[in-house]
Amino acid sequence: MLSLLHIENIAVIESADIAFDPGFNVLTGETGAGKSIVIDAISAILGERAYRDMIRTGTAKASVRAVFTQVPELAWFAENGVEYDPETVIQREIYLDGKNACRVNGSLVSVSILRKLGIQLINIHGQHDSASLFDEDNHLAYLDAFASDDGLIREYTAAYSEVMKLRREIDGLTMDESEKLRRMETLKYQIAEIEKAELEPGEDETLEQRRKLLQNAEKLSNGLEEAVQCLYGGEDTDGAAGLLAQAEYALGRLGRYSDSFQAIHDRVSDLMYQVQDAAEEVRDARDELSYSADELERIEERLDVIHKLRRKYGVSCADILDYLARAKQELDEIEFSDDHLERLKGKLKKAETVAWDTAKALRQQRKEAAKALSQRILSELSQLDMPRVRFECRFRELELTPSGADAVAFYMSANAGEALKPMSKVASGGELARIMLAMKNVLAEKDQVGTLIFDEVDTGVSGRAAQKVAQKLRSVAAHKQVLCVTHLPQLAALAQTHLLIAKEERGGRTYTTVTPLNFEERKRELARIIGGASITETTLKSAEEMLRG
Image 1 (cartoon, one colour):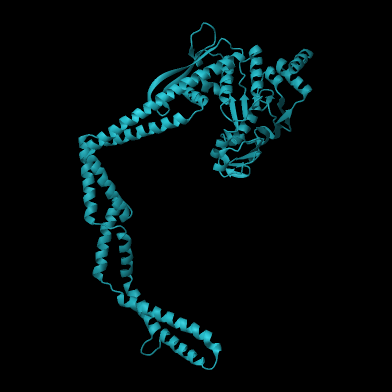
Image 2 (cartoon, rainbow, N blue to C red; image 1 turned 90 degrees about the horizontal axis):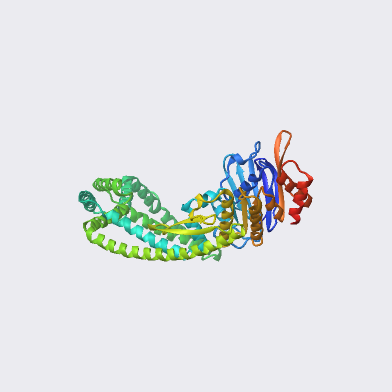
């Protein structure tokens, strides 16, 4: 659950520390006091989009820090190399240049990675969720979320992917005769051109090395000759090999007179043998060095052929030969495309059968889930003072799609005797708020998210319906932490923790504060919500009765 939220330099909030308790927490305040800013700050630490416009005027950055307690050991921690701690700390800094710095338990993470953690910690339900409920394109996703059995969905996704892959292959082979002939002529020309060159893998690298040697052959010859002279000596000088042999002989004779020269003699002896070996290698290299202008010319001509092929087919001989193999395979497939096409069509027929069988099994699973979803929503709505509502998930069969072969739409009737219609055409604002609360509550039972936030979802609700909504939220709060931004006294009265968001002007600037209220303070805030700016003994008494409930 979210236990502590620290906000710094976000909009009109200069600095605020907000402590949340388990159970039912409400936030109230005048319109424009900054309640939405608190929700925006929570959204920021969940990895949602943050804008530099959020940063308080005159400051370089904004920051939000949240402490979550009783966090389960989610797979996210190991997958992202972040140290797990049941008391998880998330911090996000937002800079004027648009950059963000996000940390989880001290480890830097990207915003997208943070979002994957955020959705496992908190669900935020706002007024915009109403539009989501109206949109029939989302209804199938709601139903699948309720079913919470991804096995068949994964199975169908794999089967559908195989169908689409085979269809693409068939489309690739299905071309008109003139296009087929043009492609075959192109491939035959390319194959003949490459085969004529008779390339060998790595030939280009070998030739380039040999060309480099031949281009510098005279320098190499002169250098080797000089090295031979230095090692072997000439008519007038002794070489290094001969001088070391003389030194070794002289030191060996000293051994007759003292053993102390044995070590130096052995070292010189080793040097003598090493130099003699090196001298032989240098001499052999000199004798083997051969070159001619004709060979260099032949290499240049060969490399020119390879270079022309490189420009068309690849950066190396190996790439060109790979292209040759692919061209031959494509030509083969085109020449024998009719046979290959028939084989692919056979595979496609089998794959479509598998996909359809899986789609039908998925449909059956969804229909069973739809019955359970309808029953649960009707039960919730009955508790929310809508006992005569009828709710139904209607199915329409489709061709194969990425999500199955079904379209699902939620239909309802809000009043007795009325026909079932699409939800968007029958629900008033207050009814929709209760329907959304019912659905969110039912879906929340299927996930492990510990905190639910309801941002003014009570819009359009009043009187007895408001009391029912309040009782439902209090009931949900028995199992999950609930944070609710509200204008309804019925909701605020049933909360276990009441936070007041207020703004004031100091020195020509606006500041927002967040204050936990005691009983007397709650009474005055409820009286304000009930009666507006004019707080009377009557509204105070009414507020006290609501609190003592």
